[in-house]
Length: 314
Image (cartoon, rainbow, N blue to C red; front, side, top):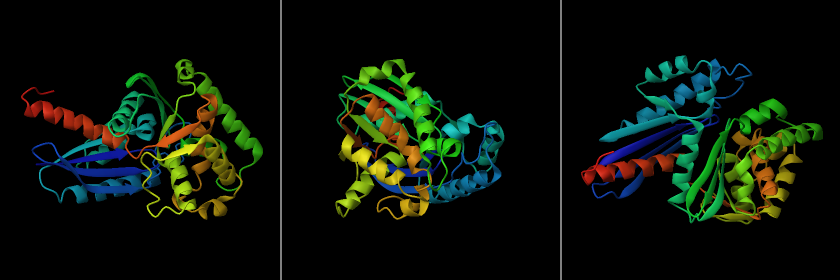
């Protein structure tokens, strides 16, 4: 028996999942934790992690370690994504994390995208689709055709960076919205292979994208409104919901059922890649996935563990 802990340190949130793996390979979820650390907050053009953001992050990681240290036979894989990847003071930050007893590995954006694919492909039917994972400081796009990854990319935009670069946290002027949507649309147009996903459904990951599903499920009075895995929305519903969110000030967005108050200031920036992607690909629907990077890391580990049990090794 093994308890496998995965730490996913993103730009907006830090997450921990602990999974018990029996000797026969059966898995049981043990713990799921999330903390809004906003690691990428105010990094600026020089890409410097700020002391306040570092303190919040270290506090969350310390709590995570306390939680998984209570379990027996624990193995840990801790990974960091866009904010840490881009940070000019990355080495100093990783040293501070190491002092907590956590070996944090910074992964490339393409690896992050592939883990997203693994997490989705093992839990949803995925013959042909475009996976979109919008994070705080990066967005991963994966084109899947005939159940295989054809292309993948990570681009350095996300809910936090787009908000801080273009959008006021409160009332959003039309000119700001136009400028940021033009910027993101130009980025998408520069991905030469993306048009190969024309008319394909989109599979959405990331907190802001999943928020759309939670808002819709709250509106339709689902008792388990956070159970969004496999839930679908049409492009018309996505556009209408986005329009209503944009039309409100910060206090108004905080009152929307299903929209976390901690995400209200960055939700518009976080939804722009999805809204534009659906238009660019003329996609008629989005399917939401609760499985992503951490699940991909787990599935990779299960494959490696299985190979070792069979005497192969990886």
